[in-house]
Image (cartoon, rainbow, N blue to C red; front, side, top):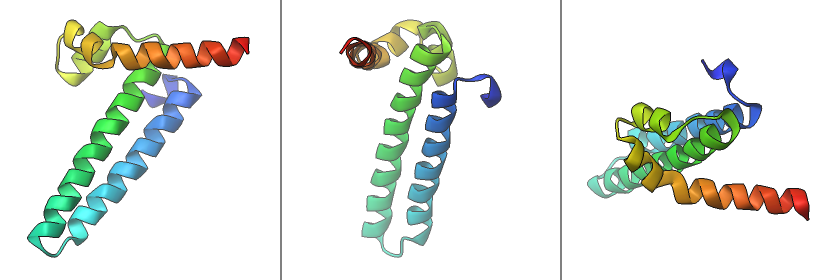
Amino acid sequence: MLSQLDTATQERIATAKRRVSDAAAALAAAQTPTEVMQALAGLEATAQAMRGDIAVRVVLNDGWSYAQLGRSLGVTRQAASKLYGPRVDAQMRRELRGQLG
C-alpha cells in the first residue's frame, strides 16, 4: 500500500504517475508515424527514469531489499542490485554529504 511508504517515496510515485500520464497523452495525441515513434520513445524514457527514481527511494527510504525490488520488477535480486545498486549508492553518498556538510 502506498500509504505505508515514506513521504518522499509517495511524492516520487505521484510525480512518476503524472509524468508517465503526460507521456501517454502525447502518444494518444500523435498523428503521424514520426510523432508516434517520438512519443513512444518519450514514454519509454520517462518510464525508465521514473522506475529508477522509485527503485532508489524504496531501497533507501523504505528499507526494501534488492530481493523485494527484484520481485516487483520480475528480475532476480542480483539483476536488481546490478541495475540500481550504483544509483542507490550515489544517492546515499549525496544524502550523507548533505547531512555532514
